[in-house]
Image (cartoon, rainbow, N blue to C red; front, top):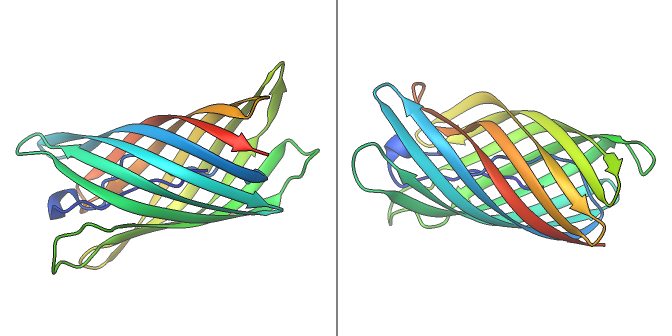
Length: 210
């Protein structure tokens, strides 16, 4: 799982993320993954673009899963220079339904993202989320297919706390060797104000050590 989002130096682009928040269930063992995301930041009169690269490590034991990652995001505004920032993301998942012989898995998730290179003297914004995800394991010859969908509530703290609803979803493909590929979409990669929101998708590759 990869939980993704990032806060930018500019107030105008605050909390626009570059990678969808993942909630595809808890998988036992340890995994590493890298994701590349593209997003569109829409507001009246502007249509900025975002791109991001994230690296995530995930650990699962029993019904509990933990993940942490680093994200580098760049906003390409319609006007002005690009703005980049690096953030740390962490999340915890807890499986509430499903097992080894049950293809449908339901998972609660909570996560937090915060930049660690905000300007000196500036307060560091953060973005948190709480939601539930449903993933369906579809076995196939030599590959597993796992579509998933995850509605959630996002919280953002910049000059006050705001709350928004969002949904992400995607599909994961896993080979018997442990190598995997994944696609994801997020309806709200982040936002900055009532009239500014972002959405986008990501592609990723990972390896799972069982």
